[in-house]
Image (cartoon, rainbow, N blue to C red; front, side, top):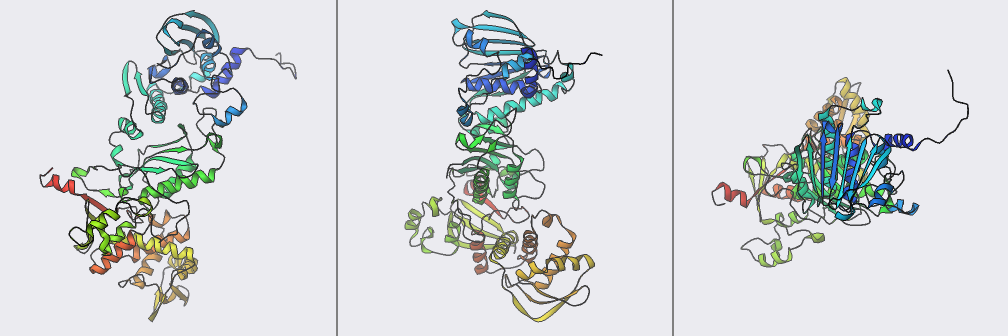
Length: 601
C-alpha cells in the first residue's frame, strides 16, 4: 500500500477546504437556517421566510427583503473569509452583527447544491449556482430587492455526515428553535416557517419584546414579571416568571447579550439561586433576559456557532443579573393574583422600572422596593387613609416611595385575622390575603440568616433545663451542628452517649416552643428532607429548618398588634411574596376582580 511521503505538505483544493470548514458551521439543517436567517437580519430584512422539505434534508429555502447584493458582491461572498461586517482586527472586539466570520455561504455551498438569487434593486438581480463547492453558473436574473438562498441535497456527497441527521420531524423542530431564538432577538422583524408547504410559524412584527413572547407562547406571557436594571455599564432587561407559575417541565429560558442569543448554564444557575427560596424544589421558572454591555467587554467569537460568549468582567455581569432578578422578585407583582378560573389579570405588567442600589443589602434591612407597606400598617397619619386627617397630603406625598418607588398601596392600617390562619388587609387596589405561617417563615429565615452574618443571636436561659435523647442519626446531626445551633441561641450540653441537655434557647416569639422546635429540626436535618437538601450551606439548612419549625402555626390566634408587627417585618424582607418552601405568602384580590364577581364589571 502506498503511504504519503513523510513530511509531505500540500495545499488543499478550495472545495475540500470549504467542506472541512463547513464541519464547524454546518452541523444540520438547523445550522443552515440559523446562518442564512442571521445574514438576512444583518442585511436589514423586515421579513424572513424559511421553507423546509423533509426537515431540510431535501431542501431549505430562506428568503428576505433585505439589502441584497450586486453581481460582484454575490460572487465574492462565495469565497472563504469574505465578509461585509469587519475590516480590521479591531472590529472583532466590537462586533454588533450576527454573522461576521465570512464562512457561512461558502461552507453551506460546499456541502449542498446551492443557489443564491439576490438583488439590491430589480435591475441588478443575479443568480449563482454552486454544486458541492464548485461554481456552475452566474447569471443576471431580475428579481425584487432582497435575497433568496436555496439549499438542496444537504450532505449528499458526505454520507458519513448525512447518516447522523435525525428524523425529518426532529430536524424541523431544531430549525424552528433556531428561528425562535432569532425572532426573540429581533421582535420588529416578521418570521415565517413552512415545513412541506405547511406553515408552522408566522409571526408579524411586534412592537415590544413581551408582544413577541405572547406571539410565541400566549399562555406564558401573563405569568411574567418585568426585570429592568439600567444602572451601570451592564444593563439587564427582560422578564422572569412569577414563582407560583413555575412548572416542573417546559420552562422557557433564553438569554441574550447585545441582541445575540447565547448559552451559559452557569448564569442560569445563578438565576435559579435567586429563585431558590421562592419556588418548590424541581420547578423551572421561565426567563427571558437581555444583557446589554459595551461590545468590547464581551467576546462573541469563542464558539464556532457563536452559541457561547466570554465576558471580560464576568463578576460584574453576574452581580447585575443576580441583583436585577432579586429586585424583580422582591416586588409585590411577583405574588399570586386571584382571578376567575385561575387567570392572572394584569400579571407581569407592573412598573417598568425597579430602582436598585449596587451596594449589597444585609438581610433583615428594609427593602428599597417594599418598605412602603409598613407605612400603612404602622398607623401613620400620612398613610393616605380615605376619610382621615392627612389623607390628601399623604396621597400626594406618597406619589413616589423610597427611591422613586410607586405609591404605597394600602388604603388603611386595619388588619383582620381569618380562621386563625390568614391576615387580611385592605389596599388601594383591593385586598391582600397573607398566610400567617408562610409569612412568619420568611421573616424568621431572613432574621436567622442575618444573625449568622452578624456572628450569632441571643438566647434566653431556661428555668428548667430540658433533657433530650436522640436516635443515632439525630445525635450525629446534633454533634455536627452544635456550633451552628449555639450561634442561633440553642445552648446544648452533652450528657451521655446520645443525650443532650438544653439550657438556653432563642425566643423569636411568645408562642415559641423551644423543645419541640429543636426536636423537629434535628429530625429533619438528620433525615435530609427535600427542604434542607436544597440548601447550599449548613447555615442555610439550619435557617430553613428553624424558620419552618419555629414559625407561628396556622390555627393560632394572634392579636392585632402581633398581626401588624408581622406585616411590618414581612415587607422589610427582600422576598416577602414567598416562604422558604417556595409557596406564596400573599394573594392579591383586586377591586376589578371583586367587581366582576359581583356583576359590576
